[in-house]
Structures are given as C-alpha cells and as structure tokens.
Image (cartoon, rainbow, N blue to C red; front, side, top):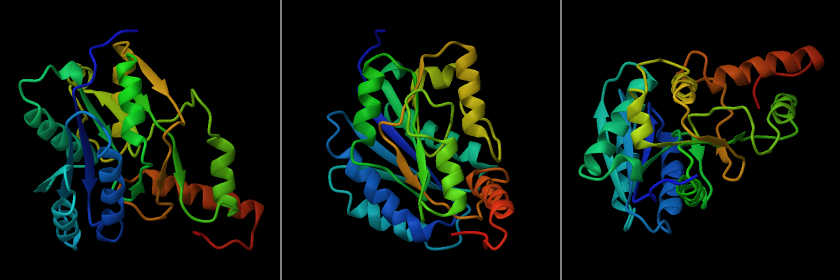
Length: 247
C-alpha cells in the first residue's frame, strides 16, 4: 500500500461538561503531540458547557508549549455534529494542504491517551491505511465483574472488531469522501466507519495504542460507552447478586 506521507495532524476532542477530566485528557494529548515531527493541532469543541470546561481548556491551551490548542464553543446537535465541527476547523487549519496528507485523530474528554498515540497513527497512515481503529480500556478496578466481562470480550489483539470514537484515526480526504460525521446523538463513530468500509477505504484495527477511558455509568450519548458499562453491570449482577452497580 502506498499513500502520500502525512504532513499534518488535527486532533478533535468533543466536550460537554467535562471539567473534572478534561485537564488530564488534554495533558495526555499534548504529550502525545509534542514528539510528532509534523504540524499538529488540537481542537477542543465545547458543546453547551455550563461548568468549568472552558476554563480548563483555556488553562491547558496556555500551557501547551509548542503544541497549539484551539477552542471552539457552541451548541451542537449531538456528538456527531460536535466531531464534525472539529474536523471543519482542522480543514481550515490545513487549508491549501492536500487532504490526503492530513490525518484526523479522535478521542473523548474523559480519556487518557498514551505517549505514542499519535506516533502510532502517523506510522500506520504513512503505511497506507486510511482508517485506524484503536482499542480502549475502561478505568477502575480490573477485577470488578463488569470489567472482567469487558476484558473477556475485548482482548488486546490485532484485528479486533470494535469501533471507538475515543480512539479513532481518519485520513481527511477519505473522511470528506463520505460526507463526514453525521448529526447523530450516538453511534456516529460506527456509522462513519461503516460508510468508509463501503467505499473500500483501507482500515486497520489495532491494540498498539490503547487508551484509558472513563468507566462512568452516566454519559451524554443515549447508547454510548456509559450505557454499555451499565449493561455489563446488569449482566454481572445476575452472576453476583450482591454486587452494587458501578465501580
């Protein structure tokens, strides 16, 4: 496989009232961006935030050193619209650059990425992949029954079948080929990967750059990660009737 080498990276982070975890998320993303040898921009999209998320984002941006953090604020119609707004900003940042050489990396505000997160995606993109499906690990007690169920269904293996918006990479031109993220309240990540697969975009699923994401049981997306963790709690409670929900 051959593709033009990546010449720029845009990281998109949707945020809705995430003041508690946003600072740590941004610190991890900035640390992953610093060693990348191509221009890298972090776009934080604040969606109808009425907590201290904007303050945390501005503080992180002021302390990001050579990594530029841009902040968008607005009211959007679902997380798909939030991610799409972030990618539109990436387009403007890299205007005049061939979109085939621009990579968009996606994560969530309650997630910590490893130091090699962007390096791994850039290497895979330079190897010719258009879509990189990363793996996630929920935080909390790994021995908790719900977490053990998670681990049994999400082994750290190459070629896994899972799609997570908290760990997703897309080549910009292929993203544009399918019209970008749709205005969905949940499942926007799976939806765009399905459409990219239909046009035979080159995709790879890997556990080489796993991220640590919140195992909280309350989230904005109606059928998102928090809902899945609640389902695991319910399933685990049938095995351990004394178990209390959550971690």
